[in-house]
Amino acid sequence: MMTPEQKFARWVRVSIASFLLMFAYFIVADIWIPLTPDSTVMRVVTPVSARVSGYVAQVYVQNNSQVKKGDLLFALDPTPFRNQIEASEIALAQARLTNQQLDAQIVAAQASLKTAQITAQNDRVTFERYQNLGAMHNVSQSDLDKVRTTWQSSVQSVNSLNARIDELTIERGEKDDARNVTLQKYRNALQQSQLNLSWTQVRAEVDGTVSNLQLSPGFYASAGGAALALVHEKTDIVADFREKSLRHTHTGTDAAVVFDALPGHVFKAHVTSSDAGVLAGQEAVNGELSKPETSNRWVRDAQRMRIHVALDEPLPKTLPTGARATVQLYNSEGFFARIFSGLQIHLVSLLHYVY
Image 1 (cartoon, rainbow, N blue to C red):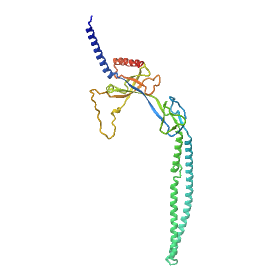
Image 2: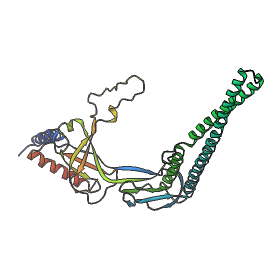
Image 3: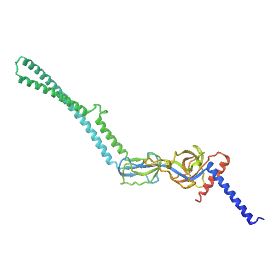
Image 4: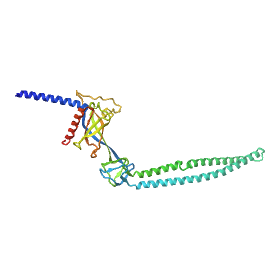
């Protein structure tokens, strides 16, 4: 028979041995089969907004509706945008009429130029004849000056008409309508009006689920203002581990995932990537001196780094973004490591039934 003191001593030895064994297990497990409950299901969320401002005429989806790329989500009142197209078409037509008027003015100016050139030529001949007669003193100096002035006025008329034709030609621009700058400006305005009308119908850019729907007919949607959120179908699982737990982890490392929403199920997965850093390692560029962290603790908190995990098998149901999970890594391919890791993650999956 063991005395009470002997029984107590045995239990103390058993407790110490159990503690040391568990301590050694957790140290080894944290290196070769690390596990973290700090894991989250992430799905890309796209805020959906109209590209133009206007009043909502109709909403074609409901909250949590499943939509495909190209599906119509909501539409704005198209009336002001159709009016804008009509105004742009009128402006383009008016620009074409203006060019026709300029063409007519150029033709008229060219005809006037020919008449002015003939007049200037005749006035020059007359001036030369009077100049010869003046040399023989057959005409007065006054008559010679008048003829010279008439000729010079004719030359000025020719120059003025040339300048006017140049001005009209520049204003008219290219004869080819496809290269005419003025017409191109109004065509661009018309195309923008047509584009604005097409933007009154807001469609899904990706497959996803409608969330946070805040629209109803009559609501004024501002351009660029988020009116609803579209949650993508693709799932990304992020897991935060202590730095030392990831020293043997690389892209392709096997993993197992347990979701709080699916207790008792263990899903095979693999590591797809790891983040280049965390916010604590980002230096703010503010023109100030650095501020080193101060701590009186002998053992500081371990820094956690983020990795991304993808499932090797589909989920039985779609989980919402933000759903919590537990991720375990297989940093070792050893037989015993696989056994212990399997027991560890399955135990966690069962515990999710009660917490």
